[in-house]
Length: 96
Picture 1: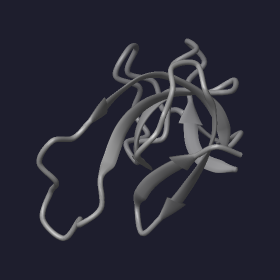
Picture 2: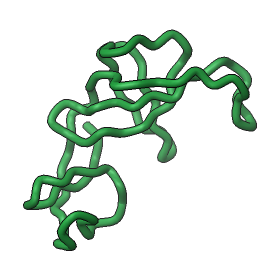
Picture 3: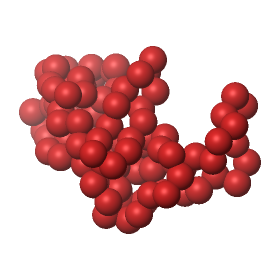
């Protein structure tokens, strides 16, 4: 499960900001499923510092949750199901 927040207006996020950017209300803590599907991804041609292997950056729609951006090993496909893992405030995704 991934910890996040949900507002009464329907806005969902995994951000640490508890004030809703849509309506300004205080959001309630919520746990979201850790699986979803890839909406889009990009294969990085130049790796960020400290990354030596090819990586992709993916936009993932979490089941019943928000859309998030996460790192992934190379080889993603559109609409592919992935599992999301959070380590040291970094989100990673891979096939379940």
